[in-house]
Image: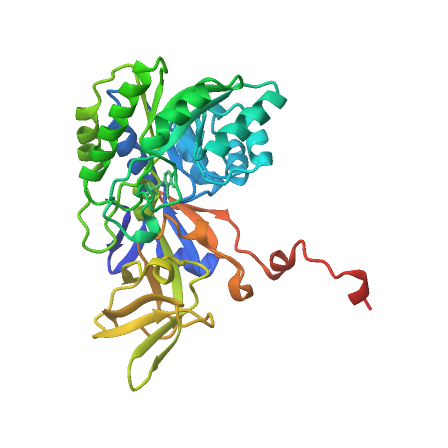
Length: 419
Ligand SMILES: Cc1ncc(COP(=O)(O)O)c(C=O)c1O
């Protein structure tokens, strides 16, 4: 459910025509719906309201300050994976005690920053990281709260590039080794064992892999208890999928019910790290048709957005709906939607049936609110797109379009070239 709907043949974001925003802000632009973001957050968070829980929004999916602030005001926390994400979360007003920090490659500086910020928990992912965190915490006179991110070896049945809970993946500590590492951590002076965590992958469209992982974690928690190691938090990660095309993922309510059925430990606080399910369908990428060209093989719709703006189709072969901003009686054709970048992987849709777009038409690339702008780059020296938040009959530019000056910020000519 989202608030991008057609009224009188025009696509609207809530109560504003998308064409009006594109006309005033320019293209390409990311456009988010405030009502959709809030509704998705509440649907997810509300589904766990009868158990002690904390929803830590996975800000890698969308890290705009305004969006983080919106969820913070809803009572949410943040799942971070870098010092930069910690900085953004704190700037947006997320409470440090609602921040969990995952990631296989935390640096010394990032750990120091997070320790000083007094975050809720480090989800540690290797034995070496456990040792290093203990050392750094000792140096700062702190006791670091940790959960071991366990790799439960569960197949999430998703794209291989976004599956993270299999033995072959780089993430987490093998569940068979977790007890040994918990025992090690519990014996270290500057660590406090606070929880158990896992995250098995992204864009999961069935609940059973989540349940399988939880069952494995429960066995581990039992073993920890038998060893005298108590945990307070059970972090189940994120990963719930959305409808991009014809997928039928479970509603957050079904997902929550399936997990809660397994939760017989009433004293545990459940931590959840949803990203895509909250922001994915709450945003679109609006782009303009520059040219239409046909080769003997194919028809290409060349637009002003490219793989630097939305890399998911190039990276994962992902599907995004391609919709006209203005409905028309135009015939339907099969075409590729491509950008101006000098790579053959620069496409937003391939061999897709769509209306016969013409130069100047506006196109909505649907379901682009997660892993869209946050994965964007300046490749081909393209300034990054503007981000806009629609709310009722108003809209707000929440990130200005980059300009050419932004592109060269921080670059310097060494003396020997300054001639
Ligand atoms: C540790 C962790 N938590 C949460 C997420 C969020 O996943 P999703 O956006 O699929 O909910 C990710 C995504 O890769 C992740 O790596």
